[in-house]
Image 1 (tube, one colour):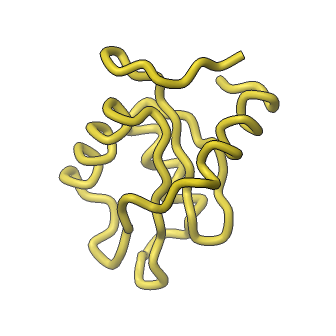
Image 2 (cartoon, rainbow, N blue to C red; image 1 turned 60 degrees about the vertical axis):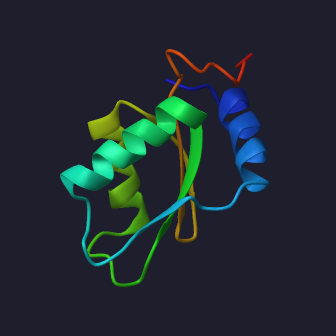
Length: 96
């Protein structure tokens, strides 16, 4: 569980990044979950876009992905989702 200070720090780091994936009409499949999990292991902090054609709202998609990948939802801003999960092998971000 992230504190509000940690969330704010992660949001500021994510603001400089662009979305690395988009969730569209295909929804949240096993393949997408695996790809997101792999990206979290490599980067720790990722941003995803949720297209209008997605059957889920951005908040619902964030909650589902966070639950299935073991990540924390840093924030949902408009149609963008920010997820964080500490990496086992590629630790880059030090949380205070």
